[in-house]
Length: 515
Image (cartoon, rainbow, N blue to C red; front, side, top):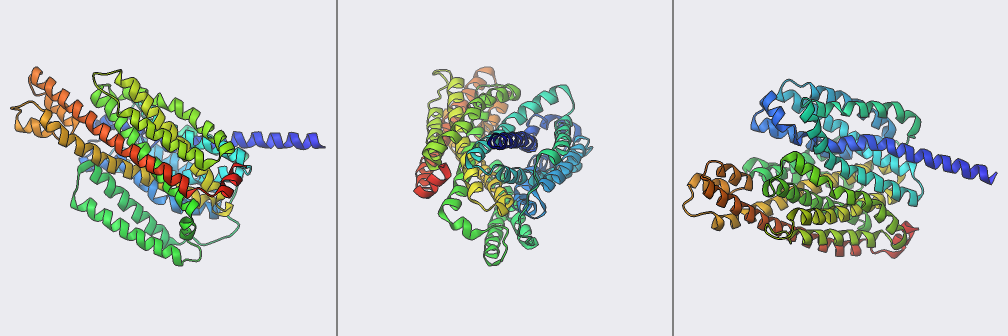
C-alpha cells in the first residue's frame, strides 16, 4: 500500500513538472515580445514608413498596455479560473500576432501590438498563479519558481537574437508568426496537464479600480520612458504628474473597498510590502545592466546589433545556474540571506564594470564577467522574491498577487531605464565637451555633445583625423558615463542589501519558509 502511494505521489510530481514546462511556453513568448522587435525596426520603417511618433508607439504600446492591465487580469484569473484565462489569452495572443504579422499600415501594427499587450497581461499572472497552486510543497515550489524566473529573464535576452535570425531570412512579420505555434501547442496541452484553479470567494471586480490602475500605470510609464528618451517636455511631465495623482486616488479607493483590487494593508506589512519594493529595485538594476552593456557592445566596441546580441546572451549562462543555486541555498540558510547575497553579488558586478578601460585588459571579457555577476545576483533575488510573496499570499489571491509582482517588475524596469539613463546622458554631456578637438564645427560639436550615436554620425562627415578624435572622445566620455551609472547602481544595491536584511529579518518566518 505504501509503495503504491509513493508511486502515485511520484507520478503526480512528474505531472506537475511537465505542466511547468507547458507554462514556460506562454511565459517565454510574452517576455520575448518585449524585445523581439529590436532588429525588425529598420524593415518595419522601410515597409510601413511610420512617423517618429508612430514608431515610438509600435515599440512601446505593448509594454504600456501589459503593465497597465496586469493587476486587473490577475484578479480576473482569480475569479473566472487561471487556466481558463490563460487559454483565452492564448487565443487572443495568437490572433493578434497574426494581425501584427500582416499589418499593412503603422496604425494597424500599433493596434495589433496593443491587443498583444492585453492578451499578454492575461498570460503572465496566470502562469505565476498556477505555479502557486500546482506546487504546494514549499521546496518544490521554490525550485519551480527558479525555473519560472530563469525563463522570464531568458525570454527578454533571447528575443533580439531570434528576431535577428528571422529578419535575416524572412520578412519582419515572421517575428510575430512564431508566436502562433507556441500558443496552439499550449491550447492543445493545457486542458490535460494544467489544473483549473480559482478563488473560492466570488468577489466582484471593481471596474473603477481597474480603470484607475490602468490610467495611473500607463501615464507614469509613458511619462518616465518619454522623458528618459527625449528629455524633459511639458506633455510627458504633465502625464507623469497626472499618473501619480491617479495612483493616489487608486490607493485611497483600495483602502475603503471591501474587496479591493490590491490589499493595500497587506502591502503595508513589512515583509510583503518590502518584498515588492525589493523586486522593484531588482528590475531597476537589471535594466541598468542591460542598458549600459548593450550600448557599450555596439557604440564603443563597434559590434553590429546581431553580434552584440549574441555576446549579450553569454551572461545568461550564469543566470541559468544562479536561479537553481539560489533556490537550493534558500532552503538551508533562508531566503533573506540569499537575497541580500544576491544584491551584494550584483553590486560587485557593477564594481567590475567600473574597471573597464579602452586600452586595458580585454574590455569585452570584463564586461561579460561584470554583466554576468549583476544578472546572476538580480535573478537570484527575483526568483526568491516571487516565490516568497506567492508562497505567503492566500491561494485565493494568487492571480492578483502575481499581477502585482509583474507590475512592480514593469515599473522597476521603466524607472531603471529612465533615471539611470538620465545619469548616463548627463555625465556623457558633461565629460565629452572638453575631449572634443578644437575648432570643430558647431553642428558636429552639438551632435557629438549629446550622445555617442550622435558623435558617430557627425564623424562620418569629418576628415579622417578629426573623425578619429571625435570617436575616441565620445568613447572615453561614454565609458566615464557608464562608470558613473554603475557606481550609482552598485550603491543602490548595497543599500538594498541592508534593506533586505532589515525588511525580511523575521527569524520565525525565514525558518518556516526555509523548512
